[in-house]
Structures are given as C-alpha cells and as structure tokens.
Image 1 (cartoon, rainbow, N blue to C red):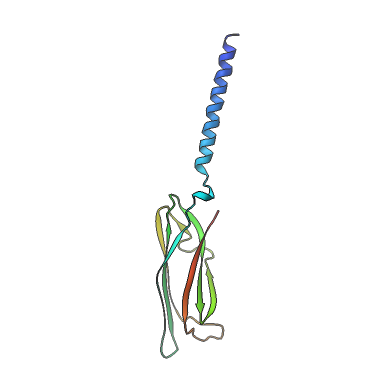
Image 2 (cartoon, rainbow, N blue to C red):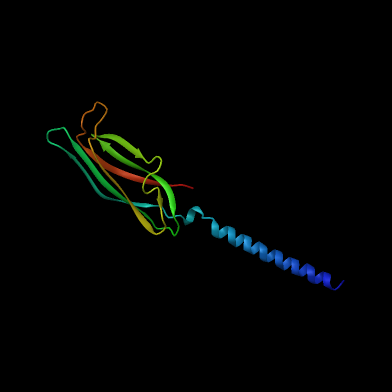
Length: 139
C-alpha cells in the first residue's frame, strides 16, 4: 500500500495537468479577441433618386453590399448617412432587418426601393445624396 501512494499522487498530478490543458484550450478556442474580428466591409452597389418633373412624385433606390470575411457569423447594426437637400439624415436599423446577421465568409445585400420621399412641410425633396454607411458589430 505504501508503494502505491507515490504512483497515485503522480497519476493525480498528470490527470490534473491534462484537465487544465483541456480547459485552457477549450476556453481559448471559444472566445474571439477583438484583434481577430475583421470589420464588415460595405460597398454601395447603386444609388438613384428621381424626382418627377411635375413635382408630384419621387423615387429612391439603393443597394448596399455588406461582406463578412470572418470565419464565423457576425451580428450587428448599421447606419446610413445621407443628405436631403443639404440637410443631414441618418437611418439606423432598429428591430429585425436584413443584414443584421451575416454568415462567415459571405455577403448580404440591403436594398431600398421607395417613393414619395417628403420633408417636414410635406414638400418633395429636390436632391438626395449618399454620404456613407457604418456597420457596428455587436460584442
């Protein structure tokens, strides 16, 4: 029995070392450090604003392609910055929306096609220009 005690202690030390290595490896492979996250890229595919000559109708169309180069899916939100007759406007994604979740190594295209864009006094907008888009990744 006395000869078995050192062997048991050595075996317990080996098992605890292996268990510690497994825990460290498992934890490090599950977490993503901020340095590893590749930002979502965006590309404006098209942007068109047309106002009818009679000043009664208008149409806004655009498409933005978001690309996730990470190996894992990303969740986030985005803001679209535009100018309406030289007044700044920011559109923020709230609630469910396309491209708020993008699978790894894939892209998502966010499109808008709407008519009747009007400002506060119910007047049609003369010009709309696209400024930029910013995608924020959720932690």
